[in-house]
Image (cartoon, helix red, strand yellow):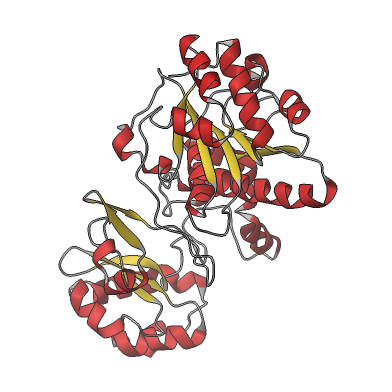
Length: 378
């Protein structure tokens, strides 16, 4: 597969959520990602539609058998990265902990993805995205004034705070190993990453520009010029007219009375201005507002559904989405001028690449046959 990470070899120990998404990001950019699957595993997804596994190859290895563990360690010897998403201590009990893997390959970047980290009082506690972003402080910020916190699906913890930081850390470790010759452990946690995503808000809080109360601040729907509004036909539009010149465009194109909307940064007036703006936006359909404001300096966009987003002309022109086997999914990002990645292959079924992937990574036909006879591979 083409891409800027072509030649990078990655071993992914199968997990759920942020680990697979991190490995998908690497695969999207051309890395050779071999996912070590287990025959019996929990998944809420049908394998055919588990797009987080696109572009990877799947091998089925029994990690409870010594021959299976040894097979993974042989992969580790050839890999640049190994990543896993178990609770602390699980990989060590399997015989695949960092000390063992670094002993077999001193240059490897060993990625660990957890919610609370490898140490600390909560390290071994169970949790999900909603819990990690709650403890990080991020969830408290999301929601309307007077309402309860609203979990933003699992974007902030699993993918933003988890997968993205794990991918960043792993590539940083690979780059550093090329000069030092030494690998290391990358301890990525969703609570750490989600907290880091709130850095700007802590800066604003230090200046007295951000309050702990939800829905009263510049970017949390407190401001009338940074929110979503319902249109005449029951759809929604987004307004983000923060800068004065953009706010002036909002007033002009929406036909607002400057006497009512002139004091943009008068926080005390925000609730009243929001009610007035909401009434104006309800006076036209979304299509009418699109025709009036889309592409202008108002900082406007329609709020598109999963069905609508792939059909928007800009997204079509950019190739933001692609279709595979009759199903739409987001395309790899970011873009590269010279080493553009191919579109990823469809998600594999567990174990469908066991023989070919092991052979490509240096296993002989006899070694593969012995693994299968021992029940360590399938």
